[in-house]
Length: 347
Image (cartoon, rainbow, N blue to C red; front, side, top):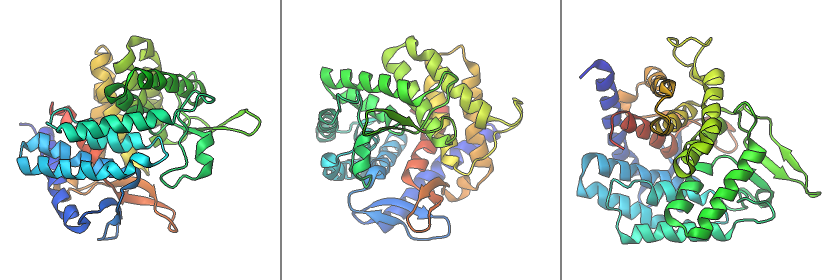
């Protein structure tokens, strides 16, 4: 095994081992985030939009090690997500896709599959025909403005959950949502906006495109899912999104051998890497996707001691009065692990 593979395997084992220490702090609550200098996690009884990633980490660990105890823990955490079914938010797709549906390598059990189905049905009901999309919604702390806002973040899990666990009507709505996101959140050169807001007079206000790296990474992930579900008609849009990422954040001075800059939000690198790793098998002639995804992960591992500590403090997160700061989160850890596992054929 070469040094790179050894480093990757060390990181995988360290990240999984870290979960035991986090679980000791959790009790029956979900870990939301831990600021870099803090030893304590901020916990939540319901988990907000991050809760599904904590359950998802246990599904990844159960699939990797094949231990019954990990599988039992994954099922327990997934069952606790049920309280989020009533949240009026499209971000429920984060919760239930990653927390109950995405890991097909495990025998999740009928109860968890039914939970994913119920989530798909609940989300389908909230589709807004007047917007031809799911608005963010007022739930999970967003407030009333969320009913007028379309957001890029949950595009990939929404498509996946509605097609994987919804009915024909839900799948149709998912496709309509994708079309609306493409119409309002993208540009011809592949940059993605984070939000589009419907004003009182019916006009649409749009964010500036291509300025938020994690939003671009969410868009890349959504387009990789679109190619998987709908085929090559979305190939160009997906590749444009990845190419925009590469030119803006993926490498320095357009040089293949120069590693990417680490942003102030390293989690965006992990999400972008997962997006490119998912897209590559669907467009296997685009070898640069594989090179770039590996470069993103190499940059993360080289800039930290993840293989030693298992701690990925790489998620730029609004923590409240302190504003945005880098934190450790189940979301960032999940995508880093998914990238590492995918690179070694374990997903």
